Length: 281
Length: 219
Image (cartoon, rainbow over all chains, first blue to last red; front, side):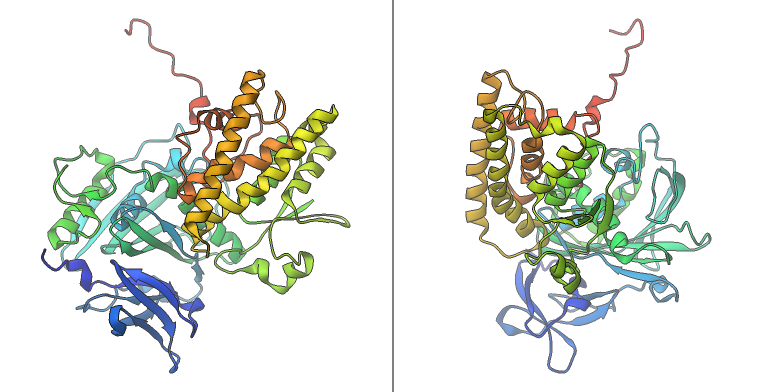
């Protein structure tokens, strides 16, 4: 087996706000790791045999890698904009492929059925046409001009609105969603899904948000996002096959699945196959 | 009535569900249980030394046990849910209310372990959860033989609401409900009640929507 390209990517391994000297035992792609606050006040991550792993602290989380990342963690310029509320949503473990967790995040068609009366509602089930591209310069998957009718798009939304979205995949297990911001037209709310691959069929999901919302209490913002994600969790744990199929012969996508198709193509192109099924079985 | 609430907590959901079914409006006070552990903070520990949620406050009355909340809500607004017309009925309801704690301690703890990474011996919890589910399945089968659709009577009572959430969410902790047909039928009956509300992981019955009417001439 050749070295998997995903070894050299950055992954979230804990909340920066919960770092302590006692440390937290977790895993990264099958390797047991420990995340703790070092004597010098910096985050330390150690892997098997006590080897020191790369570390950075960004977007509310500690990030590490089982390999040697060739570039810095992806940028989210909006995260540094003044006036945003930064929301640590907390970890949720899911018995599914880390790639499946990201793919589900990119899907809009399930909103009326899984997030009923929040992110969607029957009979407004149509996914209108949108644009998808793999941006060569940034080497990222982007979906733009995504529009969907939502009964309660955000905690700050009063009643139903047609919400506009952009989706971005800057790393194999991370996705960023830009979404119409009800209190601040012209700006985008930032909602992310950072996925820590524990094994090919097990992951810890760390949602995080950077929102323009001065009204809603922090706990309500956390609960809104936890509600959405835990509604997805039982669906994710029941997907078949468990690993994300990258063989085009495996499934017949529809036009609403364009983002998923581009994501899978991008994963395959880079050899990002940890949690994927390469040949249809 | 004020409920200290966590949206992912099945015990909090019991109180929300009972209030919705009884038509009681609750004043919800969200608690940052995860990741903030606010339930272990000074404000809530002063209210409930056990450090658990939900907590229900109504004037001077402070309740910290979800079964007591169900009884209080029902007694106030929907006494038929108490199921205490005869000594036998009242005892059956109490039997299942007490039993519901075993579901919390087994299936509930397994769910916290598998979903929110709380400590616990998962194999022991899954074993205890399975034992409790088998007992519940047997109880429901006996009820069917008596011609009754719910746990204690032929109508829903607080006993059903006490047991339903942790059972319905068993798959979150890695316990499948596939081997329990009576439990699945009972779950459908509860989800079909007027005024039923859902929580994350417990989906509403989409299939209760009217069937599409076939066009004339279709096969």
